[in-house]
Image 1: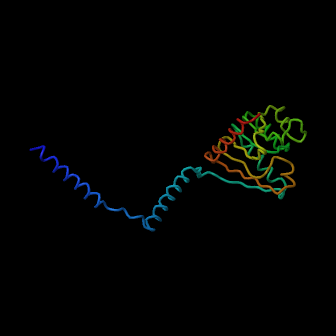
Image 2: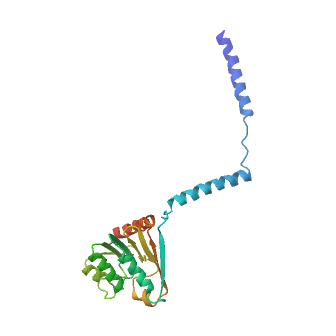
Image 3: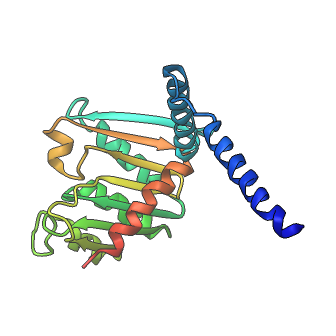
Length: 209
């Protein structure tokens, strides 16, 4: 009895499969509105991710700017102010470094117990170049290293106490102070921003000769 029923069951199953295949609903392509909605959602998600990766802005954060060559000396004074505010650490990366006033500010910071570390472009700061302050800083006990990894290591920034950042176009040189059109910006009390600069500083320092 069971053997006679097997062919019939097989026919019924085959018929059911054929019916199911012929009646499977076709998914229509997305409409223009649906596609726009998808793009908007993805863009919104990316915007949220980008916002979360941006440095947080504390309520006590402040920004100071100065320019050179006019008013004379203001840009240099802002750099000195940032250095003089240090109580724990200064991490500085620089291209040309021929400014004795900036070098003296770093030396004074080191003398009062601040841990000062400087990374300079190797090509622009030969220890045999009288204009560069690399030897002057080293002789005063400041930790200085030279980075030759790049055609030009063109950074000009300092991280102060892990929470303030001084940067801008201003090279630490007399030309930047007195002749060139330059800018200095100091962002006070922004540890998240300082941490991003510190990551780059650590990379540059690890590449020193």
